[in-house]
Image 1 (cartoon, each protein chain N blue to C red):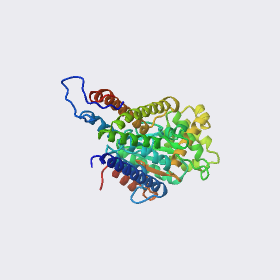
Image 2 (image 1 turned 30 degrees about the horizontal axis):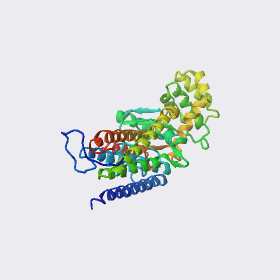
Image 3 (image 1 turned 90 degrees about the horizontal axis):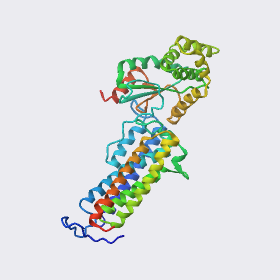
Image 4 (image 1 turned 135 degrees about the vertical axis):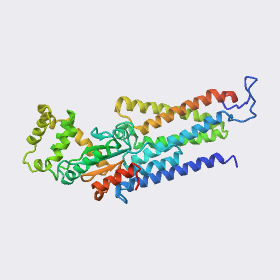
Length: 242
Length: 166
């Protein structure tokens, strides 16, 4: 019997590995195909660590978040919970979500990290791309959030402008930015690259429209993107179950 | 190679009656099986993510995707993560066999782990100097392999020498 024990163990691990791999595969596929129950769409990252743990019998990997590649984060930078927004400055629902997120930022303080990612939809919103560029150009001068606020707060006015460029330059002036540099940066490849990187990342995550919100990597269903819904989801992730 | 004579050189040490795996050395082998499971889980995870295109969480480092989507992440269409899974499974099998007293597995283990170390070092250099980006799951694998190397060296040159002629 002892002779075969190592073989049995090895075969057992092989089977567990294959099964876990397939389960992980399925859960990943599922997550991409359709959003499901509860506040969250079915999540890829959330499912995997537990399955990993089964295989490895070691502690699960660190809590799942989206890659913090994008430097635009507010709130607790090392918070347990991260809220990622993929937004288009010209999209009306994004504009409607903005004040909600502001109150959440205030209320949750350091408990939650709020991250904004550019996801302009230039085919529907003609100034969206330029607005994203404006925010990133301001970011190069360290004033991303100021421009971000400005763009969302004045969404209605610049959205209808024939040419938004002078409006954005005016905002930069109001914010005390280096206007010459800002104007140059609006068209710079670096700024474009930043916007494109965000958009690509969003697409790879399955973002199709805006606003799309992820909480700890789990996509929120559009219908719960209200103040209450967001609070529910954040509280859930913070472990304050009701 | 292979002559397993259980003579020890110093008189105060206990004689092991034909037990190929020493009672002390076996902990090393068990540790290696556990470590290889960590590596196996890690690389299975990365392999699945490679094929499903899911996002790999990136909390400790930045630019995981840059690493995992780089041209170095595959060899002839096969993701390195899959090769990693195979390698860790091999290590798991060999160290399990070795723990049960298979001397051939034990000596093969040494070479397999050294090969993995070489690959890990190369991948680390790529991340540090070519891609300028790190991926935590890749680093976890590198650390796992590094630990495996230390253990396999300890096994070969310290514990094993006491009980077996190499």
